[in-house]
Image 1: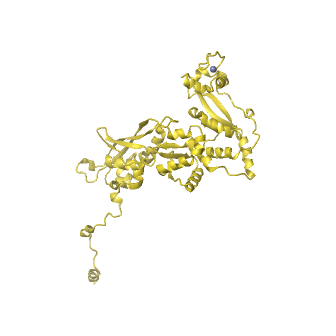
Image 2: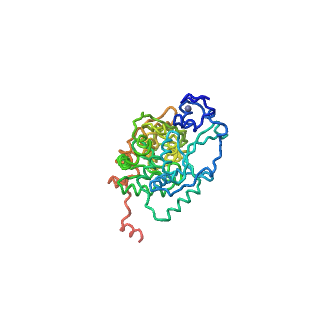
Image 3: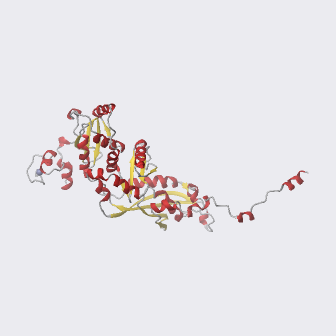
Amino acid sequence: MQCLECGSEVASLDNDHLLHCCSLTLQEYSIRHHLPLDLLVDRDQVNLPDTVDDYPQPKSYPSEQARAIFRGLKWGGLLQRDGAFTLLPGEIRRLDLLLWNLQWLSQYGFMFRQEYSYADASHRVVATNRLKIPTTYLAQSAEAHLSPVPPPDFLLSLAVLVAHIGELQAGYLFLQFPERAAGETVIAEASRRGVEFRELDAADHSEGLLLRTLTRSDTKHLLDLLRGELMAIPGALERFEQKTPEVTVAKELVFDAAHFITDHPAKCSNLHGGRYMLHVKVRDRVDPVTGCVVDYGYLKRVATKRVIDRFDHHNLNYASSELAWRSSTEMLCVFIWEQLIEYLPGLVELQLYETTQSWCNYSGPDLEAFQQSGSDSLLTHFVDSSLGESQLRDLIRVKPPTLEIIAKSKR
Ligand SMILES: [Zn+2]
């Protein structure tokens, strides 16, 4: 087989050859030359078992720097148990980020693995890149913490967290924590440094915590605060600051619902139902690491949890007080916008079809404007505390019987 990088004839292409000839891993080589891994990976390298014996014991305890990085990864829920091992998965687009972790985490005993697997469901050879360590080694380094050691650097842990799981949407930074406690630590420590986060319902229905910087200034302040640390982490700042094309993505969702229109002169005042179709459109720069504007799965989860679950197979007039008077497509759009904008600050348009012939488009206030104005008064008329305060109500108020009349009637 000829190596397309150096031109030499080799018995088989593997990382031993490639890392010496062009510093690429086999998976990168397969992507660069658009060759399926199935053709490149030797059969005996597929589903190769990994054994604890191949991992040398660490000789010293991890440094403060290594512990700060480890903690940031742990906050993000990135360390996974897999049999006798604990592993940190990485994506091939961010291989250098994984290797940056390795230069510190090798102090624990982590090693890099590019593993090739074939599972019945995948129908192809799949490569995974990860740092791995026998889980027992981690227990040994945890014992070192029994003796007094300086606490790991908070800003470094936060920078590692942001570099790995931070998602920028329209200038707001999102962090999804699998466990509440880690998220709460970050809220408190960041607040002491002048960066405010808003706590959102975890979009994936889990026990975790979804945080978003409160304003765009908080994002800017946070990135400035972490700039020194992020500059050292491969690709971290570029991910948030590199200029990339702006693209609009859309998700179509449907729900079946009934409604009626109060005071309508025609048959829409009758309870009737149908299938609604909602298009949620988000516009933003393409994230250079994910290649996406926003994960379609996140878009669907948010819209499902905030809107579809509330409306589907319900009477829209009773789904929320804002809609009890008028559940027109227009009112629904304004309401849906307010349900989504905190989670999707890149939201640019909603399109709601009541039938294939009747629909409306709506572009509401951006998140900053919404934070200042609050809920639109169009939606709040019947829940406003001033409702009923008009003196005109005296004209129709039945006067209570006076005491004199009551006394006469008892005689
Ligand atoms: Zn070569």
